[in-house]
Image (tube, rainbow, N blue to C red; front, side, top):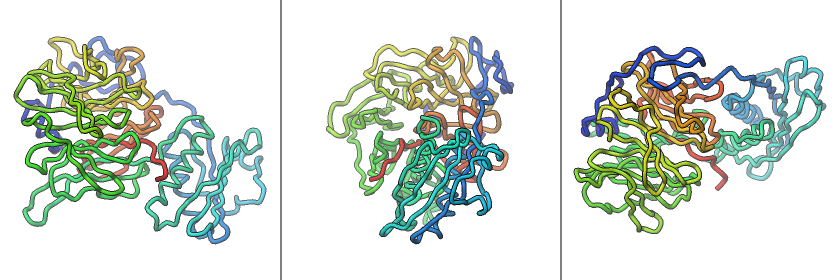
Amino acid sequence: MRGMTMYERLWCRLAVVACLAVAGSAAPASVGAQDQIPGVSLGLVYTGSYLPALAVQPFTGRFGGSGLAPQVETIVGDDLRYSDRFEIINDLPGGFVRDEVDYALWDRLGAVWLVTGTLEGAGDGYVLLLELHDVVYGEVRERGRFTVPDPSDADYRMSVHRASDEIVRWATGDPGMSASRIAFTMRGFRDTDSLTYNEVYLIDSDGENLVRLTDFEDALESPSWSPDGSKLAYSSWKSGYPRIYEMNVDTRVERMLPPVRGAGDYITPTYSPDGRTLAFSVLGSDSRSGIFTYDFDGDCCLAYLSGGPWYDLSPTYSPDGRWMAFNTLRFGDAVPQVMLMPAEGGQAETLSPYAYGNGGYFTSPDWSPLGDLVAFHGAIERGRYHILVADLADNGRVLRQLTSEGNNEDPSWAPDGRHLVFVGERNWGYGLFVVDVTTGRVRAILAGRRVGVPDWSPALLPR
């Protein structure tokens, strides 16, 4: 078992057992149905889909943009590779740069798409001119102009990511995910008292631009992005008890959700799609422990949704705001399950494959921004966790397994509804990983660090 985060220690305090017996232990190796979980087919999401070849011609520059053009080209090339929608052809010699695009040459290289770019100096920054060429038909499919600030500007890399996402949209009709960030907790170290603690960190989708958001020298858990990407909510122990806080990401101004129920631990916050309401869990000793909502902007209107003498926690909304998935211990502390209910509360149904008398450990749900899938992690192999998705179209009766090695927990969807970030453990250590649910490609974006419960932002627009 991996080292325990503050979140897991809380669960242990609630008598949750970390290692569970589950039916079956072999990991699936193909798309074929498995019988490891009674009544549930288990297989891999990806099926070896075709990826068209996209070439990135070396970018040129003028009016002062020549020196920076190769760096911008590298960012765009990496973004397109990490989109997992193309086989990328780049790192080409400068001889491929010509005044006119030679479609026959690119066709011989196997390219279906070609991206050309020119970076021009403009005032204090630059303008990036991009064209997407359809090599098969020998024509320009799309073109656009994108403002890029000076590299010393905090928005420099994000502005290039936005241009990359537009290329993805031009070629596929679907959104990209490069112009986004991932919030997570990571252990720090106090020089004064030798105690470990968590702080909230941010990292770009490509694994660059790691920054620490908080500096409280206290225990923080479960950061959650607001729908507009301007704020983060999280649970902190800074007052002596777990309470919900919200921070403006740009100004670092923080405020606390008032302890509207008095005693109890306030944990696992999440925003509703309207951005005003926070759903969270209050854990205590009375029969009203469970999931609540509160209008943070209006500073009013506490509503009780679900709970009881057991614990319900980790809520996540459907994109239309009508439904909520959450974790529950109502079937027993050792068999946490994922359930669905109306967003205003009401009758809940089990999404994870629980059958009375059988084992099963399924936790940390996150609802896809496209609305069709709910991701969570579960104990498929004995003592090992893997990332799973349930398709709501078939009522979750087909679980698809995205990971097959190591230990994998706490998934969160990218804004494109195609990628998931998760906490992973491999034989070389711990890290933050991304998996593409279509191709199955996995990449590490932060390696060798103990991290906790990530949350992927929405697409970040210019401020």
